[in-house]
Amino acid sequence: MKFKDIIGNEQAIQQLRNMVDHDRIPHALLLMGEAGVAKLALAQAFAQYVHCENHINGDSCGVCPSCLQHQSYNHVDTFFSFPIFKKGTTTYCDDYLDDWKKFLSENPIENYERWLTIIKNDNGQPSIFTTESDAIIRKMSLTAYSSKYKIHIMWLPEKMQPQCANALLKIIEEPYHDSLFVLVSNSYQDILPTIFSRTQRIELKRPSTPQIADYLVAKYGMDRQDALAYAAPADGNISLAENSLKKNNENAAFHEKFTQLMRLAYSVDLKSLRDWSVEVSDYKREKICRFLQYASRMVRENYIYNLHIAELNYLTREEEQFSMRFSPFINELNVQGISDELNKAEIDIRGNANGKIVLFDLAIKMTVLIKKKR
Image 1: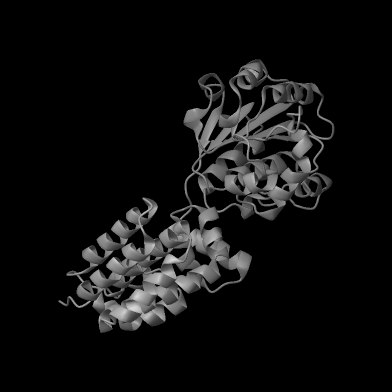
Image 2: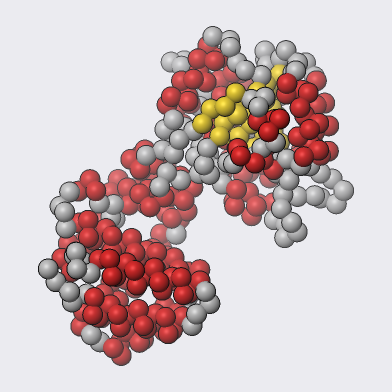
């Protein structure tokens, strides 16, 4: 992982680069920010830069032995800890290293839900157990083997059991001269205060919509307009944007159902609207809610489309083709009413209301709202 692979947060990257270049690296760093921001990736890029034998243009070279070891997650002076489930009586992160390497290699943006699916366990919440502190202290007491520093990266220190955190206080406050700790947190408020106070904090910001779109274009080779349409609803969460892209088939189905609803509502075809509500009600509850959220987004985007300011719109090419004809029907007289009904329907569905009744009621209300004109 190199600095150039990190999305956004140029200021934080420069701060980390300066620490290494001037050999003023704090003994304990805390990279903190919201879920979906590339914090763990930045921690890896920082560790690779520290260990790199030949910096090029303010980044690691990517080809020296140390960089190659980092890219295979096998650097001898880099250690990881992370939340796990118990395996019988075993509670050490090293027992999950194969799963961890798979997790890191699949996507540079950490995703807690994805980690849970990899380590699969229905019993309780994962933790960094008390016994892990013994393993960390043992590893960090060893002399760095091939580098000036050995680095321990801890993902989600807020998941440490209190006894584990307390056991690490001394080594974090008074580390060995060649030891660095890099903590990566989604929720710094939940870190033990005595650990938090011993770190130098760097807060990472959510990347912008264009930055996420650039990432999607580079990674998936997709059209930029489509990439912007997936990036905008994610609101800075890269993982959400990628998850939305991976559900592309679902979005296509939602688009079809949305266009059906609006066309049938305009023609006041009650029989077909009843059939439509039955079809959509066959979705599982969460999928119905996702459809209603998609419909709300389309209403907002079509209202904005009427402003004729392209940079304010985030529609895929298929959605834009529909919106060119449909947007005039979304105006000041009905946009709020349509949005309110979609939101109300979602609340009712989440409250276990009968899907067929809720959706048919929504469809009937659309027949009135869609006819309101300026």
